[in-house]
Length: 336
Ligand SMILES: [Zn+2]
Ligand SMILES: [Zn+2]
Image (cartoon, rainbow, N blue to C red; front, top):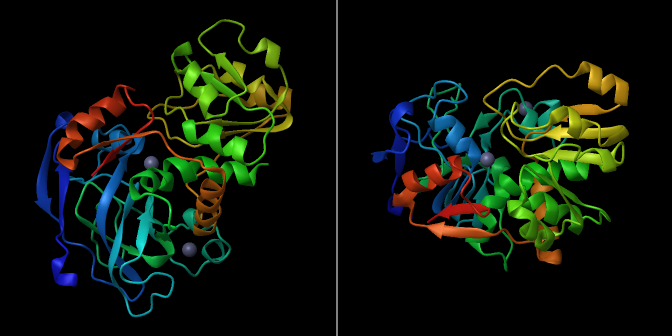
């Protein structure tokens, strides 16, 4: 079975030419006792892929094969793997490995482990191998970061849940959000779900996804009717300077939270005055734990949360990353 697995992926060689992908051979890290080899069927295209291949987050290790919303089939498992069997449908999100021993790892906070290895463009310390992502035929990951996909959930619909879905699910369940945030907030029982967007373009979609209110942040004074009223804002925007941060903070009630889940290329402005004067917490959240993946998939199955996706052949990845960069996606593109 292992012999059938082909290790090839679509790589960017130059951040100035980030729409140009070539097929290259992948040399995965040596297989560990807890590793699972996965034949990739689908991979969602995330904003992180664009930040990485364009060099927005700094110069990546080139060539880079992006992609961290992976769904596929386990074709080989290491001798100590207990949670996954060969033939299982599985997913991988934005990380593939951590120490699995520290306090964070043993208390369902493994995504915050200082030894975390991200799914692509990240170095395995022991062997020096640079990780490669899901725009590829195969991936190897530690079973702690390999998620069983329950029956009844299509692989193409599951794929984008492992970053886009989990990233907003985790802060929602930990504090009390994108298109997943609206659906999960509703599925988790929020009475009022407000969608903020810079224009009215997505208004109808937001209502279909569960928003009870739609607020256009491009309009002056948008924050006034909501003053100090919200418990939690999950900010999925991946720009800092382009959003009305001070105004948004003013809509959070004292003791409420504003949580960033996307990493902008630019700096967040100084906020101390706004936070202190309003008694608001400003924080961040990274991915989610394997435990939260299980909760998320169960909730998605029970409440029928499904992403809105469009599927493209993997060889069109250059065109698809351009669409993500330009914001022309409703709301997740998935490569096959
Ligand atoms: Zn750890
Ligand atoms: Zn992502």
